[in-house]
View 1 (tube, helix red, strand yellow):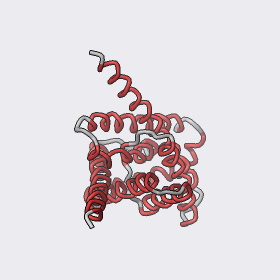
View 2 (cartoon, helix red, strand yellow):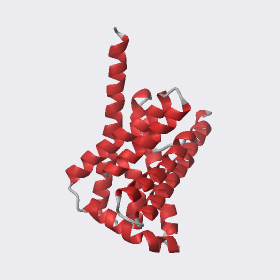
View 3 (tube, one colour):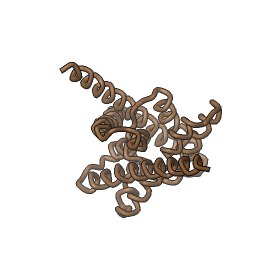
View 4 (tube, one colour):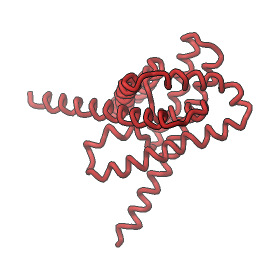
Amino acid sequence: MKKHPFLIRRLSSIAISSFIAGLFIALGATVFLAIRQGGHSYGFHIVGAVFFTLGLYAIIHWNLWLFTGKVGYVGDHKPRFWVSLLICFLFNQLGAVLPTALVKMTRLYDMIEGEAKAMVAAKMNDSPLSVFILSIMCGIMIYVAVKGHQICAYPLAKTIVVFLAIPTFIMCGFEHVIANAAYFTYGHAFSGKVVWYFVLMAIGNGIGSIGLAWLYKVQVRLACRH
C-alpha cells in the first residue's frame, strides 16, 4: 500500500515535467514561425531553427520529460517504463497545444497564421511513407542531441552538439511529433488523417531513437571486446 502514494507522486511529476517540455516546444515552434514569416531564404530558416533549439536546450538542462528524448532509453528500463512514456507523450501534446491555442487569440497569430497553414498543408499533402521516414530521421537526430550532450566531456561541446543536431532536423524538414502538435494547432488542422499521421510520427520518432541507441550499444560492446 505504501507504494501507491510514491507511484502517484512519480507519475504526477512526470506529467507536470512533460507538460512543461511541451510548452517549451510550443514556444520554440512559435518563434520559428515568427522568424520564418519574415522571409523564405535560408537565412531566415537557419535563424528560426537556432531559436527553436532553445526549447530543446532548456528541456535537456531542466531534465524534463520529452517523448522524443526519452523513448531512446527504453532499453535501459523495465517494461513499465512504457507507462511513463505514454503519460509523457499525452502531456507533451497537451503542453504543446494549450499555449498555441492561447497565442491564437493574440495579434501574434495574425503574423504567423499564413506560415503555419502553409507548413501544415505541405505535411498533409505528403505521403504516409514519406512522413514515416522523415519521423525516423527526426528520432535519430533527437537521440544524437540528447546522447551527445550526455557523453560530451566539455560544456562547450555539449552545447554545440545540441545546436547542430536540432537545427539539422529542422532544416531537413524531419517530422517531430510534439512540435507538430503546435504547428497543426496553429494551422487549424484536425481530422482522421491528422491522427493517423501523428501515429506514424510517434512510431517513426521512436524507431529512429531506439534504433540508434541499440546500434550505439552494440558498437560499444564490440569495441570493449578488443
